[in-house]
Length: 216
Image (cartoon, rainbow, N blue to C red):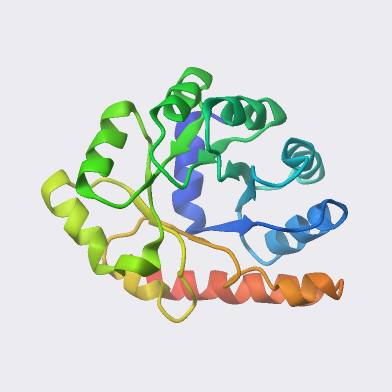
């Protein structure tokens, strides 16, 4: 297993984590492969999906030799965290601040990125041992909120998710984001429905290009 520090660095280096939500189990491996071929090296499968652990294990096996890290999102409690970690998740994201999840991740040597919105939540998350913070939903507050949180708390690593697109991703990086999370803005669900993995790959590549341009 890749070290915790290496996984965190890969999340930052990737620049974007693809949120693979609501994808049929029989298509998940193909979609994950196409998104990775588009240049995304951090993939998030959401724990609210049926058989999420099985899908994580399947994607992990398919992309075992690739330069990619696979994690789980929408992890709501400690039991879910243990399940996805056992399945092979290398990082865990939550939509809310749950200190029990952070504790499970820390005990297992797994990167934890809890969802926060306020400075108090951000401070509590870092004190509890979070590795990065997921500003969610980012669209509610916009890029300027990153500086509002970092101002009193210092240069803490923030990954905005929810409403980040190719049109505004540069604004988030300019505001201080270390990486972003993206779902429908990166993952072409119509193409998935039509089994058009070439278009899935192209859509992912467009987002990766926008991230690269934003960081130049």
